[in-house]
Image 1 (cartoon, rainbow, N blue to C red):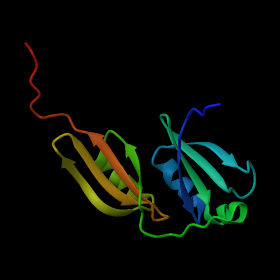
Image 2 (cartoon, helix red, strand yellow; image 1 turned 60 degrees about the horizontal axis):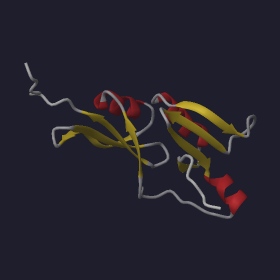
Image 3 (tube, one colour; image 1 turned 180 degrees about the horizontal axis):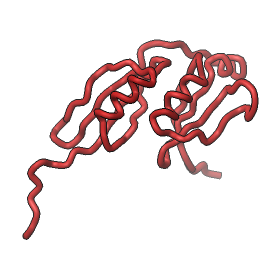
Length: 138
């Protein structure tokens, strides 16, 4: 029997799971799953479009699996596409993120900024930029 991929998501770990879920919901992601359904959550999933971000309690990860994770410099990042990088950059800071790199246009095509979420995970905010001088056929 062969295995076929059916979906994917990214998980990040948190000491304060509820605060991290609140942060991502405030940016516009929808909560779609919570375990357990009542009481203190150990895992919460938020989504936008077809992307799911899993938020898992560091304590629960260690207790349930024996695996450990520590806070530290991010070796990866969550990328959130939007229509207004500057506005989302400001909103993220108002919701508890730390600014890392302010909005900047790259190659005249992409605008991006970076923040650090309340648990220290790096988050890239990105949008397509319309070329200023678009030539069209008349």
